[in-house]
Length: 144
Image 1 (tube, rainbow, N blue to C red):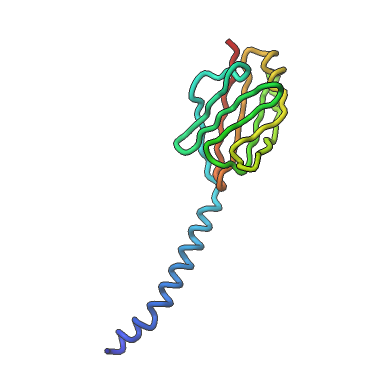
Image 2: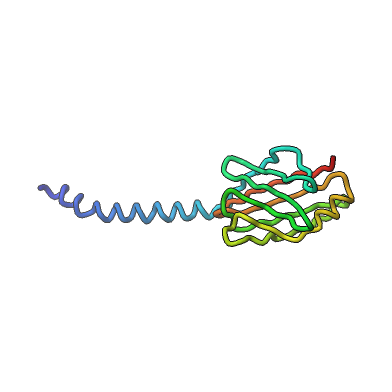
C-alpha cells in the first residue's frame, strides 16, 4: 500500500461524517424556510346550508357551520388553524380554531350565521399550518 492509499483510507471516515453533518445542517435550514401553498375551493360554497371543501395536492379541508360552531376537518393533522370572516364593511373578524387530540378536527364558536344572514356573500380567509408550511385560501360563501 502506498502513502496515498493509506491517507485516503484514513481520511474517508472523517469526510463521510463531515458530509453527513453538512447535509443535516442544509436540510434543517431548508425546513425553516416558510413555504406557502394555496388551497382551492372545489365547488360553490354556501356555509349555512352545506360544507365547503378546499384542497390542493396534499391537503383537503372541509369547512362546515352549525349551531354557531364552525368546524374544520382535515385529511392530515394540522398544527394551527386561523379562520377569518370579512364583513361587508371590510372589517375582519379572526378566530383561532381549537384542535382535538388527533389535530384533524378543529372547531370554534363564530359569528358566521349572523354575518351570512346580513349579506348575500361573505369573504372567508383560512390559514392552516403543517410542518412549517402555510396553507391558505380566500373565498366567498354565497347564499342561493
